[in-house]
Image 1 (cartoon, one colour):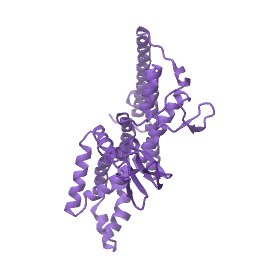
Image 2: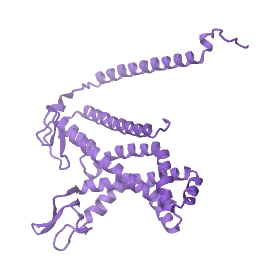
Image 3: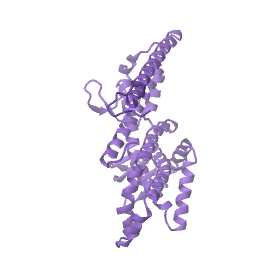
Image 4: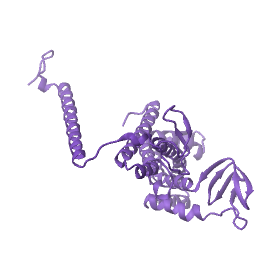
Length: 339
């Protein structure tokens, strides 16, 4: 039947009204499911005599983890150095700070290394492309926890101690100094108690350095394949046009192809950044005090496991939402269609 112009469409045939009705129905069913789940969880807590008690948040933490440094004073909301006399909540915030630190540095290192390996995968040099392929297959096909153990026990703990018979590894005119105590950048090498150590500069503990390197290398293997796919998605004519204008292969890649490829790979890159942030919780295996480690210690001392790990879940959720929001901002600035 043909509807004449201006004729009123019945509601059950109006597509827009049907779509709105479907969304309202979905929200109603979702709210009903949440309400039912809340009732069931409440009944389960009563049956098992579980009572949520968040007072542990203000109780003294009374433990010292060397990696815990900066936290936030919950009274004044100002940053301060962590002390064992601080509250359990401030101890968990110090762990969250370490997680953020690992995530930010890991994202930067993994992106740079992944970009380098991804370009190497497309190299016309057979040896370079095969070495890049071996790197990708090795690190993306072995468990991350095993890799962290490797970097920690087989690499960083086996470095020289700085004793007279085991001098530290000094690179780039002492800009980088490696010992089994960690990695030092930009410090001054001094002799102290018969050992060569580093004074000043940026110093990373062994656990932190192993975690950072492990996360960056593991994630870069995935990023390399994403970068390779993004470059291949750019039309070959772009490279040929750039070369016809007199640009070298490197200039054409850097100025023409890569900017277009990076716009394409932003969504999958975001997934890898989220994975790296969440994978930092594996630091528990090598003893680095990040968010989960701090929460686990608080849980062991206060016996409030449910509350502590609920806080951990919400913390990781907030971090993930922040990363997603930042990537959406970047995508909006580049005028890309939302995915």
